[in-house]
Each structure stands twice: as C-alpha cells, then as structure tokens.
Length: 297
Image (cartoon, rainbow, N blue to C red; front, side, top):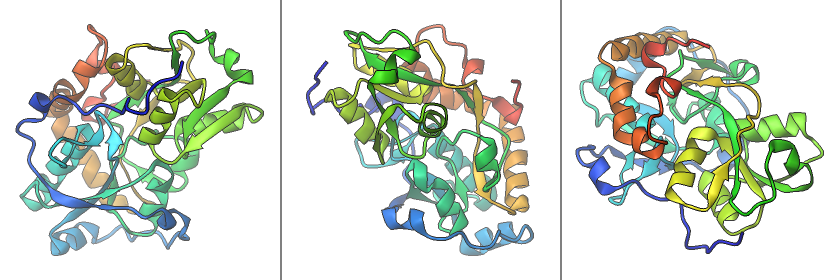
C-alpha cells in the first residue's frame, strides 16, 4: 500500500501536553559520535558530586519516538522518558529544569555513555545480555515485546511470511539485532531514525516495520490502514535506564529513585498522561509499566 509522504509520525494532542515544563534546549547528537572508541569505565565513587558541581543532569533521549521521547508543537522535548529525567533532576538538584537533553539514536545510545556525552540514557532501551556487557542497566521501568506492522491489504499474515519480503528496521534497535541474528538471509531496509523508518513504511518502501510493539500500537491507532502481526520477535523483555559501565553509584541512586517513585505510582501517572490514549481500550497498565523497578517476568 503506497502512502503519501505527508503521513508523518503524529504529535500527541496539545491538551495532553499542557503543564509540561520546558527544560534546557537539547543538543543534537552528531552521527560521528557513535563511531568514537569507548573510554575507560566511569569511577563509581563521587559521580553524584560531579553532577551536583555541574548543577545539571545530562540525559540522552529520543526526539522522534512518541509517547516516550518526542518534540511537541512548541519545540519542547516531552514524553514518558523525558518526564522521568526531569523528576530525577528535581530530586537530585532541586529543580526539574536542571536537565540537559541530548538527542540520541538507537545505535548511539551506548557510545554516548561510553564517551561521557551523557550521564544517563532514558531512551527506551531494551535490556539484553549483549548490552548489559557494555553498560550498567538500572532496574526496569517498562516491559516490551518486538513485533511487526504491515498494511491492512498486505498478504503477510505471520512473521514467517516476511522471509521473501523487505522488512524495515531502525539501526541498533532490538528488532534490528534480533532479525540480523535469527534471520540473516532476510532483506532488511535500515534507517537511523524511527521517524525515517515509519515514513518509509508509509511510502511503501518496505512490506513491514519491526519495532517495539508499544510504538507500533500507537502508530497503528493514529494511522488507520495498518495492523500489528501477532507473532513476537523473541520474548517479552524489560526496558531500563542505563549508565556507563562501572558507574555503580549513579546506577544505585537511580534504583533507589525508581523505588521511591513506585510508592507514589509516578509511572502510572505518566502512563495516564502519555501512553494510555495510544493503546487499545482496556490495556492493563501493568502489561506496559514496571512500577518501583520490580520486574515480574
């Protein structure tokens, strides 16, 4: 099904975004940064003092992945992940505006931690054994499965039907990694940005797009004419914030924060603000959020 290039990834309704405070303007991450070599692991002691001395928490976020990290109609970076970052800045530095957002792409999340461009990644990163070797994951805040979306008129009914098709993926995502490992003979069309991948799907450049199912459910609801395949690419997995390998102090502090936020159901409030309207009616919030960092697989 060919779709117009005008079919862009939607911005959430302005009414949902009222009350979201502005933060310091984010810096756009350069593509070259992802190629930089990793530096030595961050020392675990004194890192919180370093952030306090700087008087700013630097967080890597997405700019094109509603409802988690995106730009609203005012040019402000908002979403489920960015609001968590603001709350962390408030609890650590006394002011939610003391956060600097650095835009990352899926493939640059780990390199940006390794090269000290950010203190923390809050960019919808699924926990995998391979990534856990490169970064320190905190306790999880979300759960996700990877699926694929196709046009309603597509002949594709199940995942195996994509064997002789073109599947769009965003470089560095769990979908990209899983398909490359488990179906190396499949044709993958890769883009750096989630928005570019979805635009390619809308333009008919591929037969399917594989991504986190929360993103696909949201996009399908906003763009009638698409359906999400029932098959999952691998099993359900946790999503968690991440810090540089060896930065135990910051990791443990975030874990304590997630536990405290769980006591006030903070993630449920963000779910109601950003996520609930994007999913099917009756979706159980516990199937999406992990309150208090307590994962139950």
